[in-house]
Image (cartoon, rainbow, N blue to C red; front, top):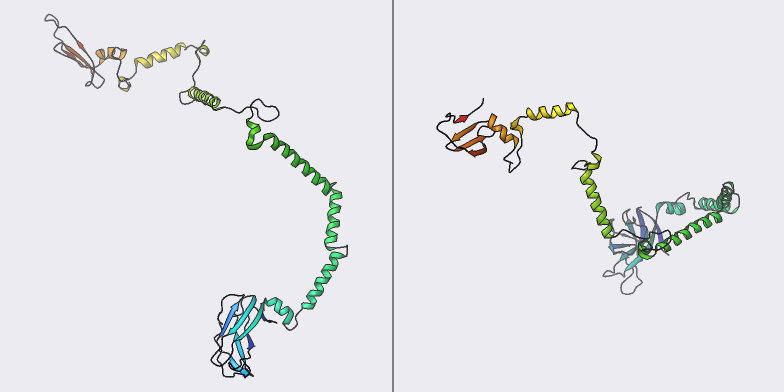
Length: 308
């Protein structure tokens, strides 16, 4: 039977007997045992406590183990290999948790009290007035008070599951019921085709063009009855006549025969060189347009115009 040790607690154990290697009976009292330990079947290793066991009597030696040597709950095997004079020695111990050890072996251990308490608790479970029996009674009372029963709730759940199974059967494997064209029932009978989605996409793009970045386009039929007031017409005329030509942005290529070019000859710089008339833009430098002219010696010798 394995001796019981308290976890993580230093202890002295008596190991042996160490007997003669030859006759297997004579006690060997002059050994210096090197003790190896195996915790829960793991590899043997030297004990952590560095004290060498010393002979007590009749081939038995006092071996000191420290808290590290006993820190693992489970089996603890102590082994000493054979020496030149003595046979090998082996002992097996059982390491248990501190509270378990104290309950059984410590002075004033309360194992009996604990067992009695457990028996009292099991009596409460079985006496029909408390414990599990009382819980069952209380649950039954709650079900009665709320007008529910476990069987009724299970039946309700079963009905819901049945409905789900019917619905999933209607949908079919991999959603076949949803893609069926011309079918009957509550499932979808025709999903949009790729061509239909393309048409929808085109229509959406047209709507965005009408109402988005291009502004709202009003149909021609919707413009009937709209007219500018006299004040609005006058304001447009005034703005046109007083427009600063240097702010005008010309199209490229510019339209040569336009009102702006006609007025440039009256207001901007122009020059005559030979038979070429050059009219400049508002900077009086860049050419706006040119013209071939016919000269006459009898005419007034006007060669240029450079308005202030």
